[in-house]
Image 1 (tube, helix red, strand yellow):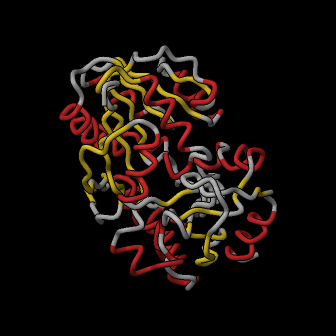
Image 2 (cartoon, helix red, strand yellow):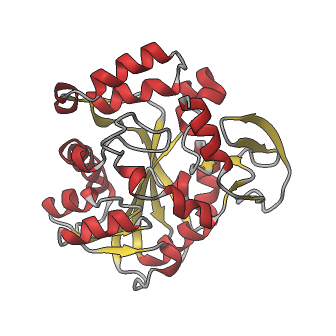
Length: 313
């Protein structure tokens, strides 16, 4: 079975649900394309999103161990998976340290930080190394077990069942998370309640205002993960943030440190030419490619600093 056939069979095994625009609350959207999910754009506010989208039961299937660690007997990178998120710890820590420097620039002081969608919790390690009291929230059973085995404070589930004390965090982070959220408005409202007065929420999202979206359209890498539900611009992100009680204080593009292996694995999103993919896969899985890392900023991941509004605002 070819990679394309395998992907199509996987896509058809999931169930989906119809949803309205999370900002406008109505279904008034124009169809854009299938990529591979059905991508639409709200005619009222311009929000780009998936409709219909994966339901709760299907999401549980997606965020399995295979999402984070590929089968050793099948080293090719699946369209929904990391090659090996765990083995990329050192590279991810470098990115997380860089991100936390930005958080510290805008937070009122170091204290408690909550990372939503923390995966294996390398973000918590970076925050702790910088003097923060860090905890995380993660949906994946595999990642929660792994993080807890290392003594990290990770809550299993989502913000909807997080028993956090109101106004108890100096900062909250959502690194590459909000596009995954099935209810981003309510989750942003929850973050607002958890933050101390004038606390900050710092997040990163794929940006549909970017050059790469304009160039690739339905081939854009932001669409390639079927569990990505919403695709924001500065305008739509600002609007949903204001609805949740935040003001957008600053936005900027920031890249990541990547292993050469991870970088090469993404070639599969842009070509179906099997001989080339096989050659790239062989290089990506060699030891040297896994040990080489570099910083890359393609200016298509928007980072946003949201400040909790004063009650008097």
